Image 1 (cartoon, rainbow, N blue to C red):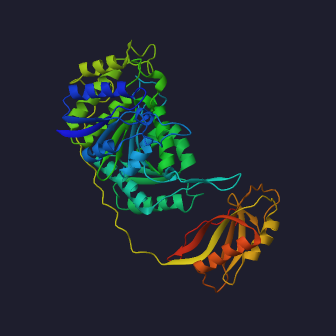
Image 2: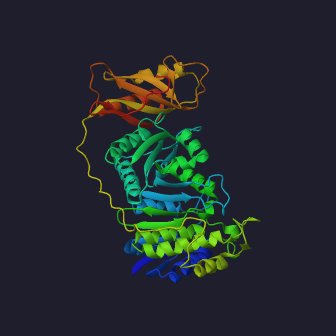
Image 3: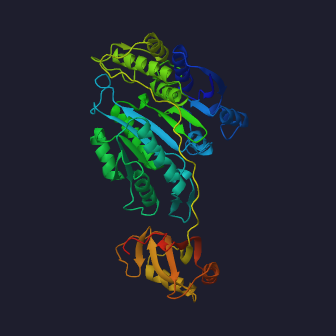
Length: 478
């Protein structure tokens, strides 16, 4: 018997959670359930976080969390509880299986059977944003070596556990050479430890195009957070419907299981919603907690129901579907099929269950870190780089001098082009004078001179070598 936490969420959440629990209980799932309330109702009752301290304690104590969709306010209100839960509990791996149900669910890819494993804690989803000038806002992309090691190792361990033959990495490291470059580098390092599993890397844009066109070319795909979020929805949709997909969110100590779709408030309370996505999440949960026999029984009964053409409105199609049913009736149909297996679709055999354990990160010895300059970001309303350079050069000192100015990453001084459009946001690089060893005092001196000459500095980024390797980007055109 496993004690889990359940949240019925908002919108269609309560209906599909009731249907899901009805099915897995009928199949014999050994569960004790603690229900919590999170989301819109909690927020409207005065809790600005959308979740109470008591609810957090229940989630942390039980470690297994089955969650229905939650409404995230747009433009205000509480932050996404999905993102908050994943990051707060260290749920670093988001696992989304995407398999077609041809010919019963319409798809152009009848042989599609892939799993997307998405990094869940960092990247642009750190949500660190600032407005820096009248015209420019910034979002920080944070990629860490521990984050890369955890997710890539998980992807290969997942492939090994479930008999997958290939792991593919998608990044954009031809442009983001530091952040995506680190992800790709770690992928190559870890792939070498799994010689029995094929590995490959694709640039995200052509990789996404290939996945959308020929998904059967892939098996397991591992990606940083944002790419994984976008492409896992694309993958789910081209299998037939986002509404049929579930996902697991796995950490060292906790796990959360959910549908990948939203709360669809316009469909709430009408007995219309398809519970399949959340049911798929619950099946992943049953595997995770070692109840694979129950998971297998539920999955085969669900496949049999889909094969029988008993469909909710969202996937109902004349000539393929035999009966249009509501949420509750769909659940009853799945329950009626418990113990049966599909005849056309391939029946599932879920022998492997339990946790995928990966080592916790051990920090490597600190690299030799050498300061070699500073990027000073400046708010300046002019448009001629030569004029701002005249002011910026007044900020030089004995150890640091202005070497480059970029605007939105493109070098505009020295030797820039008049055609380059410039905003009011300038990156001004001060590099070490030849033979000099600059210090942070030199940076403070540059900033002090900026105040004296009336240059509006926004932020700084120190430039370092790590064990002699450059740890910062060059300007485009440099």
